[in-house]
Length: 289
Ligand SMILES: [Zn+2]
Image 1 (cartoon, rainbow, N blue to C red):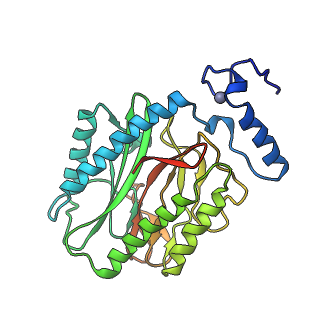
Image 2 (spheres, protein in one colour):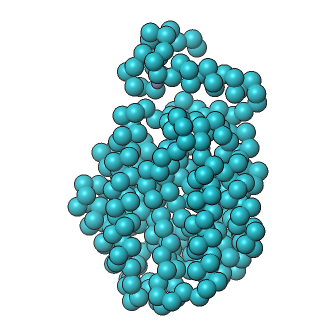
Image 3 (cartoon, rainbow, N blue to C red):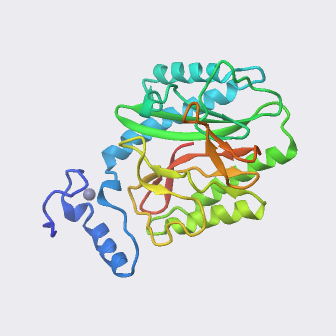
């Protein structure tokens, strides 16, 4: 479809097309002829949406900063859930995970060999030497944000501490590959190779996602070599970088009793870091961490 230069832009900015995404569409046209997969228009956020999602992201980051000061030996994951639920409400937000597809809590708390989606419980107590991923997601004025960190509890074995550190480095190295008109493939390949170099395995079945107007949007993002080799990043996209990295092999299973908790099959630990990133005209902006 041809849009007239003076018509309103498709992105919803209420700007004239020629002053908004006309040049963007020119680039898209060229990239398509070069064989790349270009982002769908609905994946592109306009400035008003970005501003709203940025505010939501600030709250999410504040909540994780707060949780970081509270984690201690003897704490239950139920307590973490309560702290997060209260803090989110205090900041004017709503926990996005609460009630999402029937999920019963305000946060995911994943200890040691839990890969992700651990459900907070009175029964789960933090012990000296544990690692715990706390995955926070917030709705603020209808805008969604999502990020997670893995915390060390007390004295963690050096090899487990290294898994957590390398996982963070994987996320950071991936972030460096975020730029307009670069492929997701480059980012994913860098993450996978760095994990492999340390003898670890990136979980294949669970990945990242677009986010902002909804909790989980397209595209699904894998962090394994070979994913998205032709799929382009473009300005206005917002997505998570959240590799889950296992000390052992990549095999996982979902605990049947709750249908949520994902464990490593070999019982070895798994770590994860998640940030939410915007592709800008010149590079990237981290919106939540
Ligand atoms: Zn536009």
